[in-house]
Length: 478
View 1 (cartoon, rainbow, N blue to C red):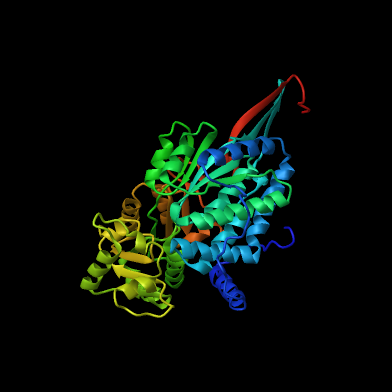
View 2: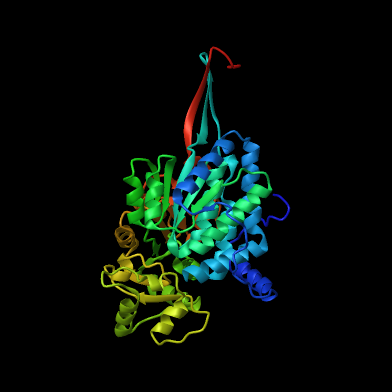
């Protein structure tokens, strides 16, 4: 690891430790001013056609660069984001502009994207030798990639995608959500300046100055864009899949949690609250509903309340909550997505202290809050007779998204059963959901989890073409 890059070796208490450290450091600093640095253009263009043309020119140069150069550029992105003033700036501006999420958790997620997204080491060569010679199968660039990024994880997705795509030899044109325009521009400019200062071709990362549906459509239709990547809701995934181009779609989820009678209930309660409240429930992997076996349900709720959950028991108050945070069609109101539990309760006239992180309530399995992904720290609990019923209901509530699911149990047979039935890209056992993306769990990080198109946890090789190179009659030394 290069000097100046903070190593992200996290144990299960990582969230508390990192937040405590970040808060101590921030208190010693003067308030940040969100004036975008004068970085000239640095990858941000007036028109989408200009952004794509610049990206295409940059990719021609990147194509003939060494693998070691690509890794150097990856390391530059890492060190630029990890630099304290940059990390704090993009994390705070992300929350300020989008009004979504939690600043301390954005610090962690941006650092996570920089530290634990794989680089060129992910591009493993396959060699086949025999009497007829040598064949190499290698991961090679697509070229210019068009990437659509969400308002929920704007900077994290740009960092993660940029590392993966550049490591694979591609350049990337971003089409961010308009509500994350400023922080996306700042991140793109910041990374481009650092890359150019370290010898990279200009415009490895580009975007249009004014993101819009119209500009996204132009990006999708431009023949120079060879691969489309959409991180967002089902509508944008459907759009890229109908483009006629190779497309990778990271869609919605509604991750359930099952807790059975064999679980460590104290730990399960804490893990569930920690996972659900992470970045105010914005991550698509975060716990969205709980199915608990009747014999331990009361005990689980008790310990969830001890770990920062506020329980709503009044049916009238529950109706008011649902009316407050949902639209007439039953979906989440944008104005409440990513807001804190304290903020939501305040709108109901309930005052709580900062220790309250999640709002819980006991409801039947067909309740709106169970069946709809809300992306806010509201966590319905469904009481069930047995673990098999819990798994069945969890499968129904996940709606076949095959995204993420969690289970707290010591019964290996039931853990295996749920994993097989759910078919999710991520299945977390006896841990918070964020262990599935490398926070307190093993493995690499991604913020583009491609369930709909089957790539799963994306990495540099995901954004590459497999190509074969053949030599006959020689180079087998066996």
